[in-house]
Length: 142
Image 1 (cartoon, one colour):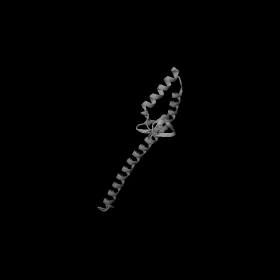
Image 2 (cartoon, one colour):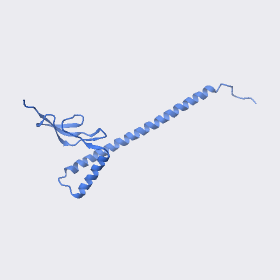
Image 3 (cartoon, rainbow, N blue to C red):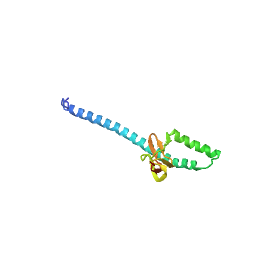
Image 4 (cartoon, rainbow, N blue to C red):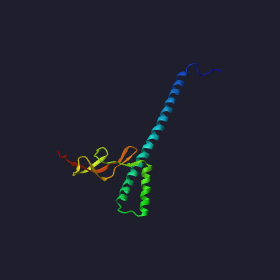
């Protein structure tokens, strides 16, 4: 019986196919990792958007002059959700254009001091919602 292959003729092809297989495996692993990262980003963006909407609900609860017991319980549950999601109120004493939105000025407030109109919030060290503030413009007397 005669053999149809000559010695050494397939060596280059085997190496080529092996390299292509390794590249495809690496590409597939990179693809899986990228898809996982993108899914996580979408999940986080969706969560942030929903939590922003609930911040408006929290603001409305805080506008109630006197809460009855039932409303207090619901408000406490809502604030617990924000605590669990690592959402904190911003500390707004002086104007910071990176975390606050100036909506007006007041000559009776000390320069760069702020009066908060709508609270700002931070989630995981990033601004979730900027604070809306009135900025003081009082000039110092000499």
